[in-house]
Length: 60
Image (tube, rainbow, N blue to C red; front, side, top):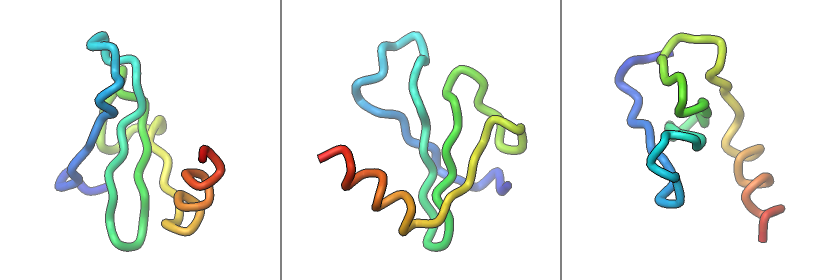
């Protein structure tokens, strides 16, 4: 995974870092646990943008 990704954390994060971080690219959505942020660790998951959109729509 590229170290050039821009990771974003929810504004609802509690300050202790207990949140999910997301990095968006045109072809892949990268998701990781903010408690152990590494750009190449096994805790990062990549999904397709269509899958991410389906997930977000299911929250509405």
